[in-house]
Image (tube, rainbow, N blue to C red; front, side):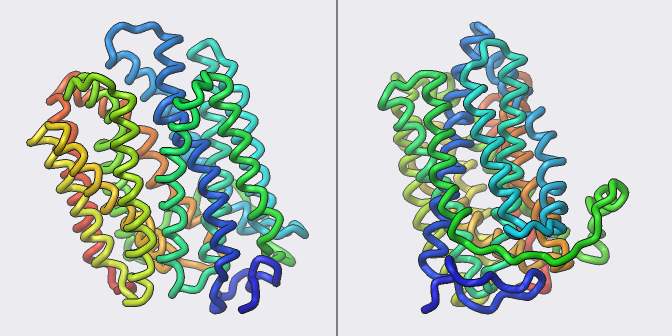
Length: 420
């Protein structure tokens, strides 16, 4: 089979029909491994510890609220960066292609911001440079995600999308193990994941071709603002897919954002850091299995909705277990269920999203809007979750809300008509 990492990419607006090879997928997965290590290691460990050290608060909720505010501000940046990068990359006429310049620019901004973030000794500095880092993450992933709809045929998209979610699980555990196992500390921890980001993204950037767009219309401010609105009446399947993604990602984020605090203050385990790594390891195994095996199965069967529905419902069931049976053994069972559900959802829902896009000329922008539904819930969940735990109903209320969001997300895929 011809290696698509060295031959020409499909024409810019053509629906891809030639299967991508194992080499293409390997480079794609390697890039995502670096991306997830650089994004999730700070979220899971480096940022909370850094904020706690700067804030010096004695009550854990104060630290989580500060983390939530910083994450929320960064999430606002994602609201702009995702669709703007997508819209600009749809129109980029560089000789290097439409997406590659944005992949390179996003990786450099992301890595540089992480380096400087590791040097910060004030809450304001942490907030500014995490917002810049997340902006780089959005620029990079908006362009990289668009390469699926540009180059991967429909009957491979579930499996290829699985290579976004599988590296997410691996990157999380590798990043935590790297920082904790080597006792790298604040600056070296950020520097390590920044270097790994550049090293792992570079092969995809250099080896995978990107079709050159000969000409394109200019992006005006009015056109950009107008492009944010995709009528759910005119494109109902896009609207239902977007709504489902928002709800399921809020459900997942509510269930995982305060997991460390749940172990510390809810279950009161002796070694919360080690237990978190073990739970993450269980979660990782099931995410990898689900994303790759079930993603490929959905390709073979030509069906997406049933997989997304079951995956979302499984996450809801895991959250209900944590809510009503708060026990460490049950937490490990729930971690497996959550990994199985979220791994399947990440791969199959990404494939589903590429099949409901309104216009091949605006794939990057439209997928950018879809990506907002992943980034913003993750950014807002720590702040909202801290308020729910502290002011309303404790950890039980948080997990019940997580279950409700996930189950509503499952229901939201049922009205989709254009995809089975």
